[in-house]
Length: 325
Image 1 (cartoon, helix red, strand yellow):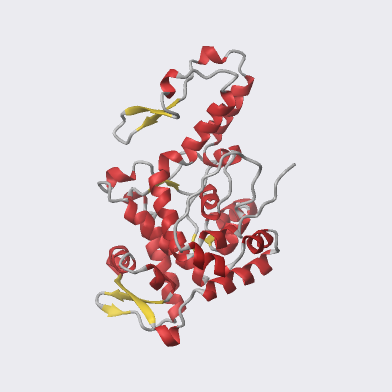
Image 2 (cartoon, helix red, strand yellow):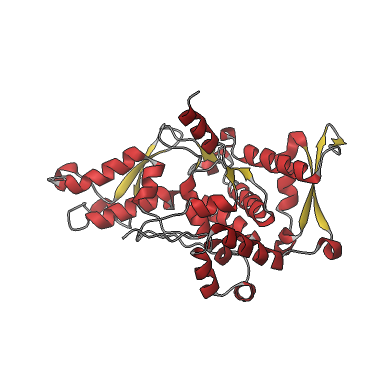
């Protein structure tokens, strides 16, 4: 194995944690923004940090940002000595089902208590290892289970130039419209991992981090998502005659059954032809649909779960605003 290929493999096995969110969200100017807000009451957020403080932290060096972030999280943590802990007990062979049943039954404030994990293997507890090791195993097993392609929640790219899993827009078919609870559960897991400082397997495409910290989207994110799609859209600017391409404000989707459906980018989009005058708006609507709107229900629940643990404004401090001129 060459040094370059070994480096690439290490990158693919990288962990999802606070540093990941900070380093993967450097962005360029863009009009495409998805703002999704859930979680704590605004009165609690105001007590934690002012907008000016959060804005200053966005530009702070990572060590300072990390210390500040952990301090803010500690302000909403429950004291184990006074408030006890939550036991997450799961049979190893049923770790996904058992864990989801427990965690999704918790009220929001209990997400900030300490979690103690008990993994049973054949009815016997794994007691010989340190609590931190058991916690790391639990996170790894649950995240791997949720991201298993056979679950139908996520899908892999068919392109070699794309890494990381993508939300499956057809996940509701596999789970009879009960898929959204899995995304909310996964959000709680990801939020809790960052909240408590655990590193968990980083399996998803990095453009999704921008939603978590509230970054705008841009064409560069489409390049990460699908380089071929990105190149095709870029070439529209060079077309001599857009009319000859017979484009309108729709996009064709292929369902798992093989059925093709025409989806309108705007109401009445099938009647709106793409011209040089509306090309910029067409590209904006198309990129927004591809990266966000087609997976909005699933993404909404994923973010809802994360923000139930960590207030969105605190996560926005990880938004590294290095705008290119």
